[in-house]
Length: 194
Image 1 (spheres, rainbow, N blue to C red):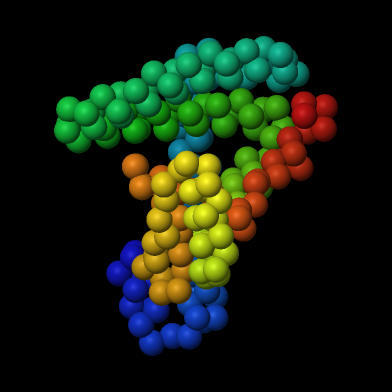
Image 2: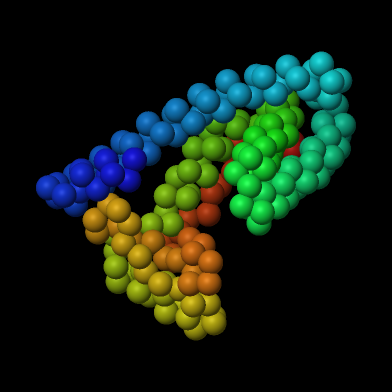
């Protein structure tokens, strides 16, 4: 995908690049949402067989199941880390898929509670997209802010020419620039459960 983006950016003006990138992100979000729904159906069926499905109307019971399921997510995520430490792609893959499977059950529980997962997913994607910018001066201001806090970062140009991200030096983590917008998830949660 980066190769396609680089090819787009070679002979196209900045506004056209932004538009192409935004269109691509919208398309990707739609594809991910559809894949998420399909995958969740298998997880939902499996948990029904295992008598682990949410009980309609039992919000407190469903919240307790989320608490228990979240411990399984942490356990499976540890498998990814252990596999990476051992340089075992098989263990990383197993941990990734197990993490996705147990995490998707949390999505089943959230939907049972009336949460709009697709809308919340799009909101989080839009928020994450505010972690990059074409405003180099703003990124420099963000760099100075982190530097004053003792966090060593660097500005990196993305494969999309003229688009920048801020990365922490010690581990490459993408940092939040001053233009970052936190996701507003409250509209996707039923009012009585906020």
